[in-house]
Image (cartoon, rainbow, N blue to C red; front, side, top):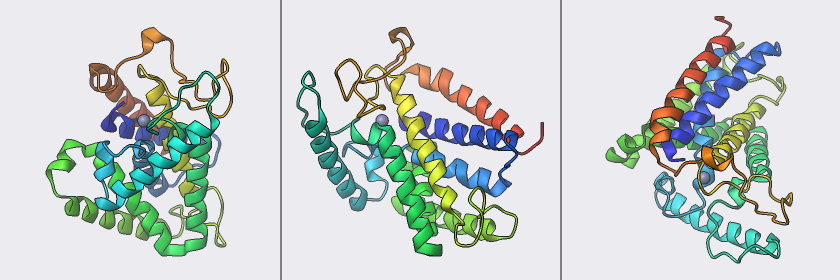
Length: 263
Ligand SMILES: [Zn+2]
């Protein structure tokens, strides 16, 4: 899928998690629902930081382009080191390591640890990164027309405001994991959900997604998992705009009503 569909699927997924949390009697205060939704929609774009040509590789200027190069190299190396006998050698890492469940857990756990040990500034940086990705994903071409600096400013101000709101008592800095230094441990949860939802989105496209690596399927460790072939479409096809994105909006809206206890 393309960026906007990925980001919207991430936002809808977090609102669904919010509905589930309310049902399990651990409801999210509204700032957690809002911040998590934006983080999740940014995180749902991040797995594509494994190729320099992706639009998203420009999100943080030369910094993210360099990061893309590193992730591409590491992904290619991991792929070639762990591929099965029937799997061909590859020279590019797109849709490999960052499109798997171990990566989703690693990146979510990593950001939670950074939030835990790094304190307020670490939380602000994590929010800033994901707000910029969310703006890039949700506004897509519109964000490209404006300047990078404007997008970064928007990311920085929204990160700052969200932390100000979340820090107030009862607003959910301590959601799920409790207080006493464990505030913001939950930041990793929307990041894991976003990465997994990205993989599911890619599994709907023609090329599939090796989400279960390193569990072998039919002798292949990088088996491109996907829906039955009649349900697949090309990335960027009309199905994304005409069917999936409206569906994500409706599902997200329904999820938010349940999450906030309106219905
Ligand atoms: Zn992808």
